[in-house]
Length: 292
Image (cartoon, rainbow, N blue to C red):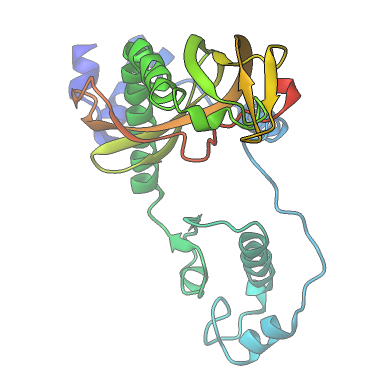
């Protein structure tokens, strides 16, 4: 095998082909078998939604013929009629991008005329750099997820702390207790369900992720007991002689955005920074459904 490695290259392979001991390295490739395998994998990717085929639809071809007669890309200066399929394809792609609100779209083409098109997408021949970048992002995303798994307990505590900082606010419960005086609020339980992790952005040095969970809280509120009261006609107010405890339980859909420093697979932080917590969460108790 050492000899094989030394002889790699065009000339080396020609030499090896004449040595019987290396025949197993130069088996004939069955073209039909390769094509069948490719078709099966392509069908599998499509069925799993990994590849989406842009549907063909009627197009306004006026602009396409205008490009043809004016020698615009992809037709070029020779008015190449063979470029009509590319022109129709590019038109479908552009409309698909607009209709679906897509951004950061890349189109790979080795056709020089096609690469000269004005497009909302980036048209490039360099798919190797693109794949290297995407593989790097996948690697960074996996590292970020491993850091998240290390810090799950801390993240759960952050969700709990967020609620504890807010649930002692008496004003949250006035609607629910019919605007009676509130004497005490006790947080009986804060339960954070299973966390869900998803990467939302990857930069050169950082991975940003959103963590979501359903958080249930149970609150005990001490308020006036309406069964032990009398109305003072002189000062026109109610006076209460006893208190009552009312429990509330409610579940909130929560989210947290975190940033994790990831430079390479060997250079990253095992800690995270919180970017935001529950930006769209509003705490309120004003419905009979909140009573427990």
